[in-house]
Image 1 (cartoon, rainbow, N blue to C red):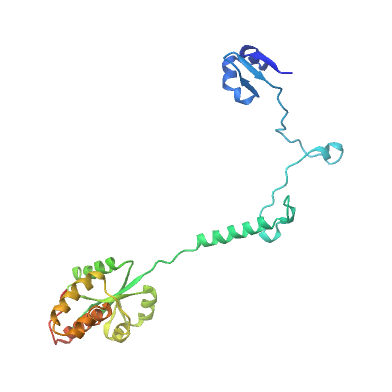
Image 2 (tube, rainbow, N blue to C red):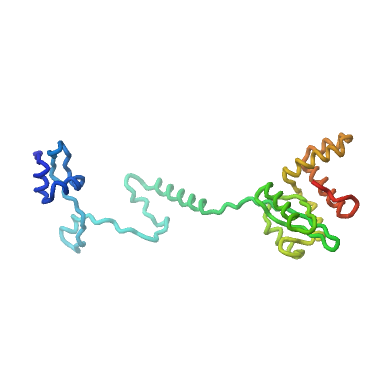
Length: 250
């Protein structure tokens, strides 16, 4: 039968003050009906402490002990057949999916590198720098910085996609210092590559070359291709090194 108690009566029943009752109301199954009335229901007994296991006797069969957790058990030894309501195949597939996803997340994604080549002509020994950058804009910046901190003028030959370490390992026998290598030993290999130039270079060189060969329709059509501009730029640099023409300028 439902029993109605005032706040004072409920506090006396619990052996606490009314202010204490207000603070601990959420612990008991009674609902506030009015400022002074509470609807009280008998509380259910909840087992909060599991006694020590009994070796034998009727009490042993009545106690529901929590299952023991198995640690360091491989996925192949999991008992999926014990899953309630099925064979456990769905749980097994889900665990495999999560395992594959975690491996993918841990895999380091390699960033794309742009390997650039900067030539420094010299009467005694010309050198070429093999460096790396992450974008065309930074390639242009690195090439400009070579001129800033170098007493001799340098020229950007171009760049390709690849790994700088592989090129350094390939040319290590011809290394002069750090990223600088003997140009004459690497010349044929570098010139055989499909080099590219940053958009800032193409934007300056194309109008200039078009102006120089405005009377040659064939060359004008070729200048629409970036590859032709790169080859023309490299040829101009090599001719300036041999002393046939003046040094090319951007």
